[in-house]
Structures are given as structure tokens and as C-alpha cells.
Image 1 (cartoon, one colour):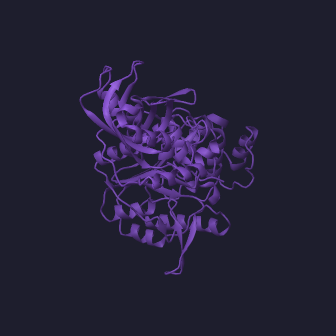
Image 2 (cartoon, rainbow, N blue to C red):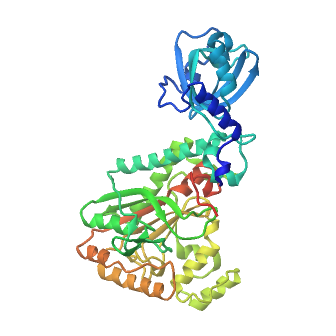
Image 3 (cartoon, rainbow, N blue to C red):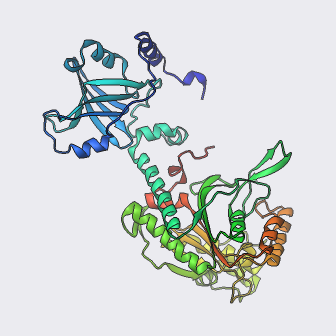
Length: 487
């Protein structure tokens, strides 16, 4: 955007005339008695006679019509929009002419006066006085009611929020989802904490990090890809139930489900395992859905998703066996051939049966999981932080929750054997040095923390953005992020 595009020339002239009239176009505050929704609720059914009570409301001027000595205008705040009635006989010539000549759609103003209902049945404020609170120096887009240009909506979200009340509702619901999750966690006795976003060693997930440099320390730091290793340090330190809601950063593709920065809730509970964590996951999401929709059924993209508990639990091996007839009892080549027969490509470089199982699941099963489904018991090769399965060699006690074919949550029985953890870190680091940009580094301090003794624990990460997408019926993550990254 160029500087010449910032201000409308005609509005700059109007601003100067306001200043010349010795009026401050940007005063400091305004006392409100009501918001729009409170007035509409309180005075529903009111007659045409002005109320005895005088109200004071403030918001953006979003409509201005009329002629002569009467103006009908609309004022909009976060709660809604209502009509105001501006008349020469009430304001006098000087104030009426100021309103008519200097106030334009887009300006912020405060008004006061009684409430009445017009003959057409519209509840309105009869304006006895007003104050300009902020002069708008840019015109709202033509047909700003329902701004449709997607590029402009995302890049200039303020215009989107002004123009589209339904967009404001999405982000009000997002706030309620986060509040619901926080309430559930606090109600279960978890303590909310904050862990570093700038980290000397990235870990907790397989992802490419963002790298920056701290000049005073003269060393590279990384934006966190997950808070996991720090949260588990707190479990070692004696905090038995901790959670964090915050941003993670991954230097990955941008598409309808991915943004480089995204919001997660991550938690850890001592003396629990992944079965307990699956129960918690159900509770968190069902509570949020009930807070937003009022029930256990969600309409999404033309289909109904039933969230009634309990949710299906299916091992990855069983899911792949159902999809293509092979499991870990088959040879690697048999698994590769079965995948290729089903149209799966790029399996030539997969070198272990565990990795092959994960690849076949991702290609053949993941997108089919519409109803909430826990996929359990992941191969150890793709689960470097999960505890080894108590009954199945080569597998871990890990789950992922899928809904609408999307990964929604990830949880483990947490690996607390420091020697095992060190060996898995070494395996990840070998892959990183061989060119895998998403493999994890060795975090020796974390291994040292585990060597102090970490109790058995269950951990969980829930993607807030995708959950909000499901609960607000949006298929693009950009619709639920106030300021998404754009190309």
C-alpha cells in the first residue's frame, strides 16, 4: 500500500473544516449507558412516544439518508445496529448543519436522547445531542455491507469486520471456544502456565522451524514448534497437571488447513495414560461444541457430525488392514505392493514397516474419518516422544483424533525413560543431519530432566483453529484467523 492511498482527499477537506469550526475530531472518551443490543432488548415493543429515560450509545455511522430537516441514520457497535433519528427542530440549525455536512458513513460518533418507535415499527434513538468521536478519512468500500473480495477481506480484516456481521460472530465464537477449553481444564484442576516461545533447541514435534538470531547472546534461536518439552519439564518439577494455550510456529506450506502460526492447547497430567487423555479430549471438544451450538451435533460443509460420546477408537494397524489388507505381520514389500495397488505413490524410499504403516494410513484412511475417531498405537518410528506400547513391540501408546478427515488432536502416554528418549533423539538427529528438515534435534537438557524422574503421564495437544473451523462451519483456516499469513 502506498502513502497516497491512505486518505481520501474529500474527507481531508471535511476534516479541516471540522478543525476550523473549533471541533476536536478525535476526543478522548465518551460515556455510554447502553450498547445497541441492550436497547433493542429493553425497549422491544415500545410505542411511538419517546421514553422517559435518555440513553447514550456510540458506534460507527453505517447509514445516512434523508433530506431537508430530517435525517435517518444507522449506528453500529459490536452488539448490533439500530436507527437514530436526527431532526433540525431538536438540534437547532448550527448543530444540525454540522451533522448533515460533516458526518459521513464510516465516522465514529456518540449520540444521546430518548428511545421511540417509528410509525414503520423501527426502534430508534431520538437524537437530542451528538459528538463526533473519530473522523474517518477513508471511505468504506462500495457495497461495504457484505464485502466479498476475499483478498481484501483477509488483508484488511478491519474492513471485513466492519462490513460482515457474520465474520464478527465467527471470532466471538472463537473466543468462547478458548474460554470453554480453559474452563474445562481449570475445572479439572490443571494449572495454566506459559513456556518460552524463543527456544535454543526446537522440539516437541516433527516440523521445520523458523530461525532467528539473538545479537546480545550471539546465537541462533527458534520460534517454538510446540511447548511440549518445557511443559514436561514442569511435570518433572512437581506440577502434576499443567496446560498452555498459545501460538506455535512451523515453517511449512500455507493452505486451507495450515498457517505458519497457529493456536494449540497442550496439557500434561501425571499418573495418567493415553486412555485417560482420550477421555479428556472428548470432554473438551463436547463441552466447546455445546457452548457454541447448544448440542452434540454439528453441521459442517453440508453434513452432520455427531459428537455424542463415546467416540470410536481404532488402532492404526486395524485401520490399514481394513483399507488394503496388510498389517505389520506382512513383509515391507508386501505392504508396499498393497499400497501401490491402491494407487499410493512415492513409497520407494520408505525403509521400515512402521513408516510404511503410517504412510498407508495417511494416504488411504485419514480422509475417510468423518465422525470423530481416535486412531491409536502408532509406530515408534513416527512417535519419538511417546511411550512404548505395553503389549505390542514396535508400537507406541499414541493417538490422534480425526474428524472430517482432519487431524484434530494428538496425545500420548508420555515417554519417561531417559535412556530410551536419548536413543530416539539420536535417531531423529541422524535423520536431520541426512537432510530431513522436519526431524527433531537432541535436547540433552530435556533428557537430563527425565533422568531426575518423571512420573507416568498422559499428554495432549488440541488444534484450536481447526476446532473453530468445525464448530463454525468454515472450510478455510483463514476464515477463523483474524490476521492470516498471505502470499
